[in-house]
Length: 76
Image (tube, rainbow, N blue to C red; front, side, top):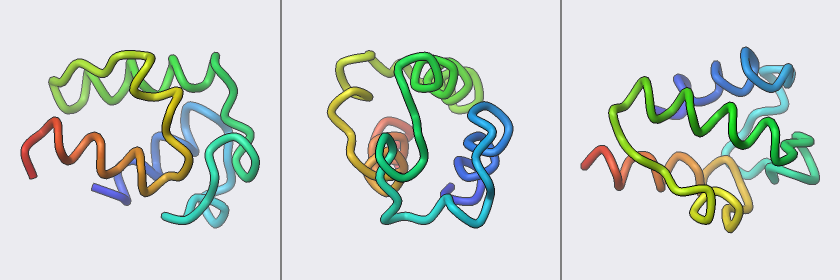
């Protein structure tokens, strides 16, 4: 799932693929602001058929946190 989410960062947020690591901080390292967060959330909801509240996203710190949230919602 990490690789799929990595591709979303590249496509939706114009982040270099090499920068998207599990420990990368969403805001500080990748520059994910609220607009990118909404876009990523919409894409994740569509791809995985889950619902992610904005409040859940705004509390995440790293790429790994995001992957864990989606895996939990998908049931992996």
